Image (cartoon, one colour):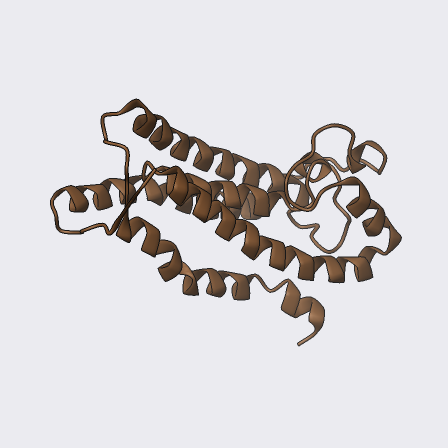
Length: 209
């Protein structure tokens, strides 16, 4: 298997995330929000969760309009790629944070976001090595102008490089939307876990704000 194939193999990343699922489940099974359900902070945090998830789904679809069908074939510097080199990873991390926030805890949301950031930072670092081989100085210039993860708004690479119009690839957009909508399962999931906790069928060991 070539280095390129190994680095960009989506299946390996998905298997890793599935293997990491127990680690992600532990906080929501063992931890309960320290805010009481009827308090304003708890309600505000729980509202932020679905909001982050919706931003995640919309952002991933936005990115797919530019990267779909072009990955590793063209250097994409427009759309969300104008502000961050890895918008799919950034929005996915927001979605993970949203999952944690649906449980009414800033701490769980921060843990999930940090987990996503560390995983995707490792993956993007490996991908960058290959992309330098693909695009050479053009990619190095892009790296100097656009941050790897956190978006920086203002003048970006898309202002100075060739402009690519978004392309509507139904298959790619559908797959991206379905993957993103999996984050929405956290909403009924949080309600189920909270019901089990209040019924004393699931006992939390920590209470975190």
